[in-house]
Length: 313
Image 1 (spheres, rainbow, N blue to C red):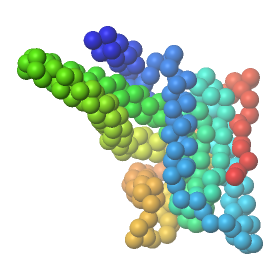
Image 2: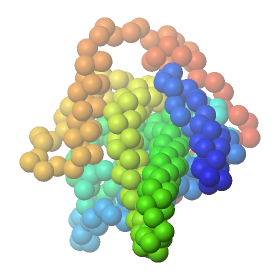
Image 3: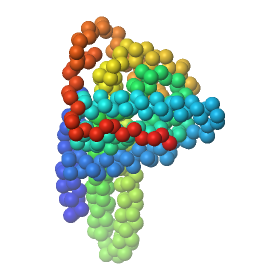
């Protein structure tokens, strides 16, 4: 019973509603647990990198193309990071700088963490994206960080784990109580069965929490991607890219392959939605500090350090 009460208290403590930059209600951990959220999301990011297939070693001209791609990522990342901090003053309170990394992974993909790390897989180079489309890939991943999607995913995982630890042991206790009342002759057998059931319940709780959190996070994913697309387009507009140019370049993606990664298919879905959004009339540009979306970018805090650009590996 104390364990159940403690778990209930943890659920109440962990549950905190927040609003994303696009007005969507999110379930986030309160401020005291933000550090745990950052560590968990960093672990989740590294798990994705470990399980992704490594890219083959490059040779001669291929190595030169890789180095050129790395430099493009760093240059585009720096440009977008400066704009991100101007548009989102609270970012400086969450992490001091973005870090951009190119990981030697065979498939096209990208991942990030709540601490501002943005990782682009080597396979993205083989999509032959120009700067506008590649900047969108970076901006969309940065937008997951800006919108607090990693914190939302971590909170979801923790809540599901707590719920599993509450429900399954309660069911196990009920079974044990029923066995205890079945008669004194069966007490020893009931005790042995209860002990075995406790071990099984613990394993079931862990498996259920893992599967449940993955399923729930997957249900959030479409909303998070659409939100990241919107924020990304605002970032690109503030950084000087034309939305129609970005859309055109994204639509120039190579034709779909029979077994392309889920991430690439997700990028194609983003491309279709952006192309649809760009079919409206062209908005007149306002001279001065107004961006393409008609918003004034706030001044960068004087004590804000420049964004960190990590050496690729």
